[in-house]
Image (cartoon, rainbow, N blue to C red; front, side):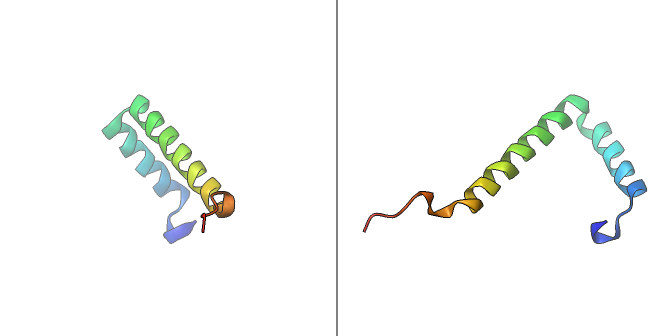
Length: 54
């Protein structure tokens, strides 16, 4: 795992996040993060789609 974090630590962090934000807000937050990452990957993949006019 990155940063030396194991499965146990990730579960504890997830549990704390659920307690703080609640399950519904956490799922919406995850969905938004996924869409943002997907959009970023698409923009990085095809940077030449928008050609500048000289």
